Amino acid sequence: MAKARTVYFCQNCGTQSPKWLGRCPSCGEWNTFVEEVVQKEDKNEKGSWRPPGNTKLAPRPRALTEITYTEEHRTLTKDKELNRVLGGGIVPGSLVLIGGEPGIGKSTLMLQIAVSLPMRVLYVSGEESEQQIKMRAERLGKVDQNCFILTETNTQNIFKQIEELDPEVLIIDSIQTLQSTYIESAAGSVSQVRECAAELLKYAKESGTPVFMIGHITKEGTLAGPKVLEHMVDTVLQFEGDRHLAYRILRTTKNRFGSTSELGIYEMIGNGLREVSNPSEILISQRDEELSGITIGAMLEGNRPLLIEIQSLVSPATYGTPQRSSTGFDTKRLQMLLAVLEKRGGFKLGTQDIFLNIAGGLKVEDPAIDLAICASIVSSYEDLTISPKICFAAEVGLGGEVRAVNRIENRIAEAAKLGFQEIYISKYNLKGLNLENFDIHVHAVSRLDELFLRLFK
Image (tube, rainbow, N blue to C red):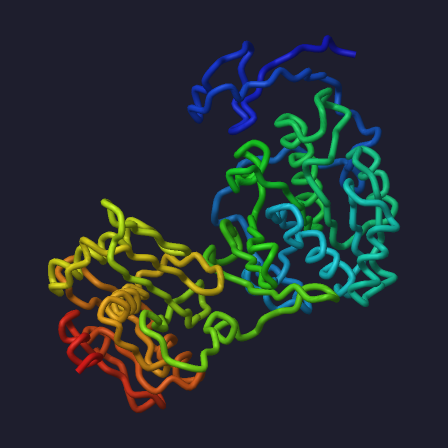
């Protein structure tokens, strides 16, 4: 056995150093270096996964024209929301990392997928016993004989069972609980997470088996472990939501096989997670009476158009400095829109407390909701209601101009499908747009003052 040595790893970014440092030279964080024992052993064949035959030759350089490419056949699951965020299904040999807060429903989601796939699935759990997983499966109402459960944390033992079972899909819950005998540090440390992820990556790519890994997140909301973990995997999914609310959002932050802007929405019910096929219905609250400060904006998440409710509250400031608070929207962009309203619109908002909320717990970055936000703020400021049958889809520039946005046809069609009667867009979006195709009245405006004259006449 080779001589053991100790090195220091930054627990934030994974940077390695031969001595302790107060500040990480890579990420700049203080007091993040931890000493870990690294045991260098020969990775022999015993206990490690190897391809059949184990006679693979060293790769040689090949011209790009020599390489043949065939379209990968994706595996469609019964979960349409997961298919959407993965880019159209599960890709063979892909490594997918799913992160989220404790108790948000990551294990429930993956067990739900495991028991619904018509394939041989190995679910490896390092956090729960077999009895706990069986109880959850019975609560979901799905017990499948093709789903196999293994409670193990040692990667060498896991690969021995993989050789015997030969699964078609592998699920790891979670990557922070795995431990390799080649590294002598504790489970969950930077070196262990990196080594175990590397072994799983090699298995996925050489065997063509898709691997799903559940990952913990830190108190800052980022995935625990070294940043290299996110670089190694093919897809990173973030499972978000308030544990006190029923709705969960599965968001793509990295995807080598599809768009990185996709969104899947679930509802947590007694027997598992239910797919929400029409999220606009849950993002728009039902009201018995019209209220000021509430508007509807048409946004896009990937290829999915969504209609969301924007709520504003404008009231005179009772303290010296007016407050500017936003939930689900960038505060700096809100301040920019307020400056535009004051400079170009003539609204005296400098002495007002302004609170903005995106209903439903969404975090929105689409600039197409600028017009809806401006209308919502002015509605609350003047205490004038806007009809709930009106929605908005346009960006606002610093000059007070209403700018065009992309894929306006999808936004208008979604609004018409949900029963809206009017939609305000930029007049620069009218080029090449056939309004006869939509069962909704389209208003085209070029400036904010023109919008307010039409809304509050």
